[in-house]
Length: 222
Length: 246
Image (cartoon, rainbow over all chains, first blue to last red; front, top):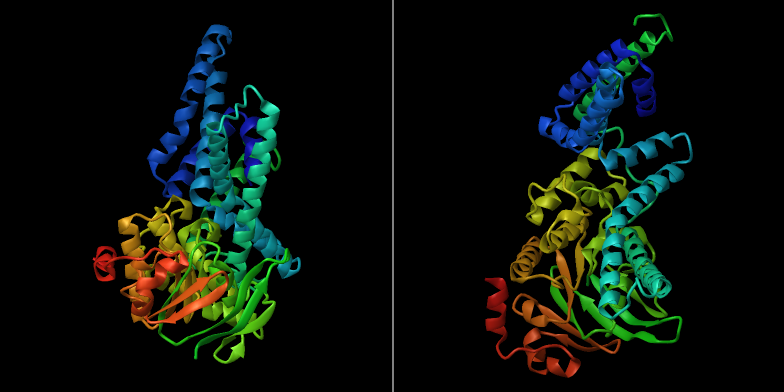
């Protein structure tokens, strides 16, 4: 869905973009996310928007409207990505992986989704370990600027040992909590959440279908 | 007897002796402190209680049957809380992590939800369900790891060094949690090298040294001699206990 949206946003003409923009605002309202979240998402792009506006005035040869369209396109993209990240937890993505793998043997879907979850869980832990090792080695006089290869060798070896230790502990913990492939499948989500997610998906699908129709896939609107 | 360890020995692949002829028992509802200095074999013994390691000799009996006969039931009955809670977190959110155990038991969703709620309430972790486990404080992480085990409704809970790296409020929170679980009927085994913190609440002390059980009995009898086993002793255990329990 996001892929289709990404294509749409850059191929639609102006009228289509307006529909997509209005639709993304409606979708944002429907998702009940905080407006503060939207502004926080837009904040890092303000400089880019200003740059586009200034560039169009200086070098655009009077094509101010194209700069405006580009900014609207980018805002719509930010809104839709906020809806996606704000309404979909990583757990949902993990469970969706398991759900998509349902036609395959149950074991594969569960193993894939659990491994995905475990890997992501341990990313912050590995970064933390890497930081601690780097600081400890710097405190013992290993200077990466002077001897980069020595740094890489001792750093990567220590990190590997630490990561393996962490992996063994995690595996022990999973086994001690009865990890097996006959787990309860907790996807789709509970009915209240499910109806909301279905609503958001239906709205986005309608929006994209209208835009696709506007592009002339079905009949020329715009 | 709820749990019996009979002639348990463990020799590592490099020939090092981890445990040698360990014998002890745990009664239902007891709160036992398993103490010993670093390298005395405490964690190895803990892993044997859950069937994570295979003994070189001897066996562990749960309600009279070998734990290896039904490992799944053993792991449901004996919950392990590991020393480093961060290594134990599997879920991306607190509720997902607590639900990991019940999901493995194949329970239905309503039951999983109920157990998650109850476990989080038992360890006094309200309002953090949607947070990442890694964003919690040290004491909260430890309590979350206990909640993850409680959600599986175990009869016996084994905690490995539950006070490591915690400040005074953190230790008090864990001790309060331990007492409350014991009052609710859970059998608890606290593995530690600092018996001062649990001395006043423990029913029995088992001292491990060089992979062997050196003492098993009331904590009061061994208190003056714990220094001999590389464990910190206290002049006045009553006073020490008051600090941690108040």
